Length: 260
Image (tube, rainbow, N blue to C red; front, top):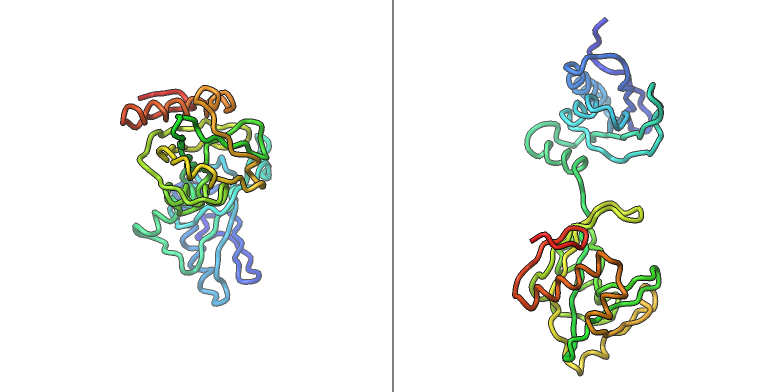
């Protein structure tokens, strides 16, 4: 028997849809559209939700076409004939657009890759020494800066990070380095930017004070000594940033290795 909609149960304004069955992939989109219409015909329903195996591309594609947004992934939660799989949770709210450009971009914003962006600052003193930070949470040292917040520009986020770490508002110059960071120690991949903080006047060096929460101490070291305190990939970024400053260029790296 060919069905026209999927079974669902309503509780607390949520319609939980059972997206199982052996329906052909060409009918999945229609089933979801019809099910949403039936669920939202009930005045108290504000969201329709369901879950599928993360590896089930056909069902996930149908959910995307029907305007469902990915809300989370439960690791190893789903049991399939092949073994355990991650469980992808999807939902569509009553007011969500179901078709058109806005619907498409809203859905794709939840399922495409989101990379962390990290901004760091190359600061030197009149003797060419590099400002390098000793942190409280890892053995290797870092340049001033850190991870951006959602919706924050790289320059604004860098100024905020330095203010939080060192209690001082810095001037951010031009972009020196763009580096793609490979996955590392549980982190997913990311993009790091290093901006030029220029040479800091001698009278201002003392203004940089460690917050003693994330930053244990501020050091001013010759470039070679500063690089020796850093992880290998971070070391490559520092040396590239110094080269880019000298040459008036912006360099692209991957995992700390120069590409162009």
